[in-house]
Image 1 (cartoon, helix red, strand yellow):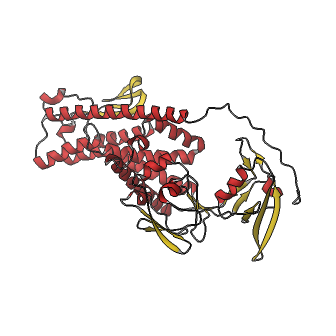
Image 2: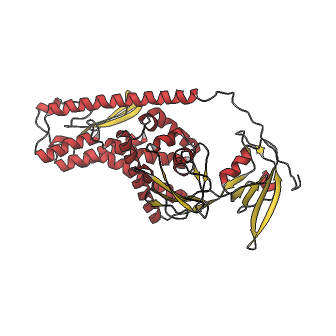
Image 3: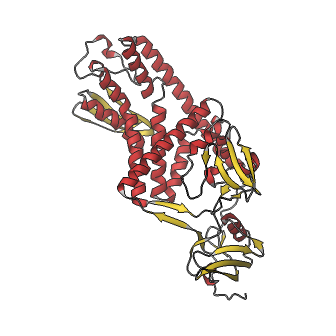
Length: 458
């Protein structure tokens, strides 16, 4: 509803700025729960949150109202205005959605800054079992990532854009035991990532996080064992540890049994080895933990730097979404796995909102860009379809015949209804499929363990 309101507000403001009469400003579809007229415009709020529209006098829109066709154009009607003004009015909704995304990215960057996760200095990485990186690409834990496509990888350098993974004939270059290897990526990489969700770098299952402690929770087993931020865990029960996922796997799979940790701490620039037995405890989520967190570096940005980052985020997301839609349309990726309707959008937004304001508004910004891109597609009824008619008028020096416009608008409406029905059905099927593949168990009620003071000999 936020995105639709901003989109329609763009059309409304542009129309009023050029002296066009707006008969209706509607957010949501019937049944209507609020209707009020101010001046020449009727404002409507519908109960069904699947869209909205601004009805501009003298314009053939989704209402397919053509009663004005036999009358002389009025000065305050859409059809009586110069072509360039009409193009701006049609494009204003898309422009507002892009501006909204830019503003959100700017506010998030300036308000929250950015966090950088610690990385292995030699660019080697951990590969999760049953991940896309392991099954489809053939990467192995300990490989050093050299490049993704044409983009060289440097842990402390610029971030590789997600669009690098959406190119034809994608290749990954790694170094394994001093040997350079070129590994081909799957053609349907987006789909495979959806099917094998293992997290890590772009969902590939790659983790270049070292086993360095970022922070320690007071009173938890790691704190009682004497661990400190900056310590590097080198082994657990005698098994060498290099990467953070290896460390967390040992803890989560401990069943609460005592684990012998070995770690190294820089003391006056001399590495000193420490050792202690640590007993993981169960938290409220029924997970075994010891009270350690990943090493993060918080970076604050000023307004000018935040603006530059926001522009980059908006551009990169636009490229990624556009490329993704093109790959889906070209049949390179699964429609069922990669397109979602209202149910999926609601789930994604709900999960983001439960995680806090920052994830929520980040998703809103990405969806705002998506809405802009979809609306600019050259499909009748959408803004892009109206622009096609206007470009025809620009080239042919006359408007398309009314019957042709009405016919194409009807075809576009039918196509959109079919697409919406497909997406909603796909959402429902996907939801039931995922539920069917999961064993339903009674909700777990965990007794959070009490942490007692222990000695290194225990």
